[in-house]
Image (cartoon, rainbow, N blue to C red):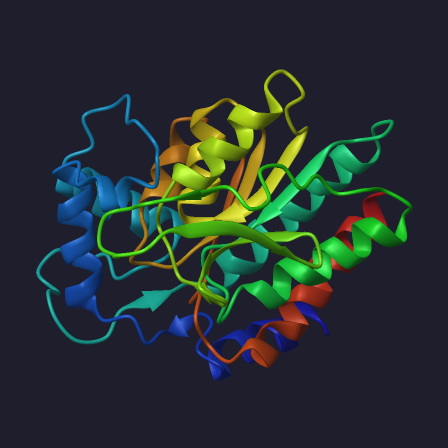
Length: 259
């Protein structure tokens, strides 16, 4: 696709443009992060003050949400041009790591119903170059808040996810990534490709990290502003998986072009 065609696809499928995430939901999450609610921090610690207005201003700049502070309900937006620009920066970052000798790469997602398709495509591309992806702490399990049984790390096609008795689940929790990095010790990844708490915990630990985030998940954008996350791609993270295919292809082609 050309840039214009990809942009039109993002808007038509609501990956960007007028997204399904409401203004009320976005602003509620910005306040929650400003109040340092752990559920919305994704394992990051914030060095700056990051008040509610600061976070809103950053999300206007980084994701393209509506700038009007008095717009408090109804439709909100993601700028498709920011999505494409960030995807291209992500591709350049991934390519830079792949040019290294025997790079160590770890892929994880907290959104198996949507973003998994992008992560799996990246895993296939990396394996096609003869590289082996890392898979630490497979089977590690824990009790967490909000659920009444143990959840564990499970990999599918080299992508780590959180398993709940046979079902992959949505999670913001940074604990699984912390467990993975703890098991690795000094043999840390050269790159983590992830989202949610998987990305936040890796970036907080000082690992080069690129990630995806919805307009109601401001933590990774703040992490990028503070230099802990290398690239954060703004997009709706739960549209139909097949809708991500053109964006995924653009990302993979960007990586391969830079190698």
